[in-house]
Image 1 (cartoon, helix red, strand yellow):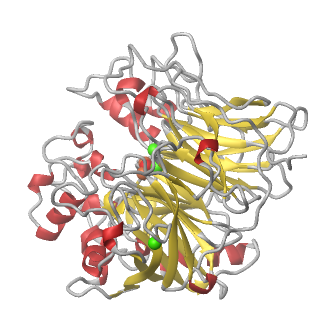
Image 2 (tube, helix red, strand yellow; image 1 turned 135 degrees about the vertical axis):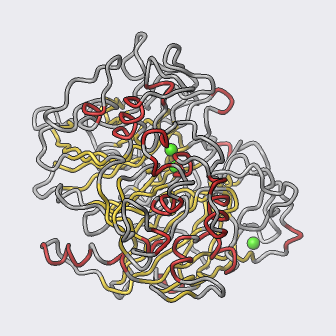
Length: 604
Ligand code: FEO
Ligand code: CA
Ligand code: CA
Ligand code: CA
């Protein structure tokens, strides 16, 4: 059974009310500033951002667009970090004043390729005022784009299904894209999930190989020309000509920010799907476990357990050993079994008679290195068509798994199931105890405890901690806390922990009801477990992403401000952060107390 965590310190602030205006709101006694945003310099030779004259050359030296995940890797000596940001996707109508959706120009397309990927930026604390600053002159600073060489590693590297005319060996890919969330490893590298990669490709109908066709269909690859016309300027995005190029995206990538000359890696051992991110736990015997979500309706939770053990220490030999840990191991998918009778799951969120949505679960092995455990599928097929392998293995279809994150101290795993408005519709799965609502608009948070507190275990227990939505509704649950005293939360997406056993939750509700997304905090244990409080809100049309919780600061990625239906560059729905009639720019903000004090203060 799951018992409550120990009560920790609670950040002391008055929750902010819901907001719909084009601004960031923070609690009284806090302030924020932009650390870095789209177009700001990442490399010393970056030209100043010029909205009206964007080039591939400039963008490949500047901070990319629509930053989602944000990692802060500490450098020795304290008060200096390498910040790694994911640039998930381009919003061309908001990026280019002369964007022509009918015929995108080559410069627009190439500039977008440079705007995708990741940025590594030195961040340091000013000795003068204690504030964080991003520096373009850090010797580790780096831009990774859609044309940066990556190495495919793990059991499926070199597979015939990964070979293309540009890479007959199936081991080297140009670029990463659709990088959504991620994780920082104990060995100081950063993992990032390639998520909605289907949007880059054209002409799925021209593919003849049946398994490839079926895989493309399952991942939503479209027929006909693509809306961004990338295939016009690089034939690898034309599936009729390079059907296998699709298989070279949709992986977990790993970059070593401390080694700016290192070749980043795509890890085939962690499977291929719409990866949200990956987060590491270390088992008592030293093996490492990566937890992962596949963000689509009715997709699955996964984990990977390494064969090798992590070496302690950050000397070069240990780091190089640890950077190989994700090359070999076992890939699992999760099956959830409720402990209440199915008839008590009414689809409206009313808890069953035992008072909780909870039960037991199994990690089903899909493959160990070259060996498949799924009848009818080879090892390569399991890694490349992982969704199908999990179907055949009997994994539980979930309500869009976003971040799946182990608590660094307790090892308990928290999964954000963001929403699923199709649950219970005709022809798809209905509610179950782990996904208890039909037409789940608001999402839920699942808490999972591995048997024996061993992340490598194959059995677990679980319960829902939050069933999100209007606290006045009987179909919502805030861990049993008094719902008249919580902030309403909907569509949990990214998760983070502070050092005091609070869970921080960033939301992606898509400006529903005219209200902005935000960042919330909830104690995981003690008498206030379930007391959700809204810490900040982001501007109109923005998504709140990538929270990093420091001792006296919070970083938030303000992604795609102004992105509302029908938005274009001439009439953006947001002018954040520069104001006036400026273009909106996605950015990382740093929030702190105005007096510079610690985030978490014990109440007197
Ligand atoms: Fe890019 Fe699953 O959010
Ligand atoms: Ca996002
Ligand atoms: Ca139950
Ligand atoms: Ca996300």
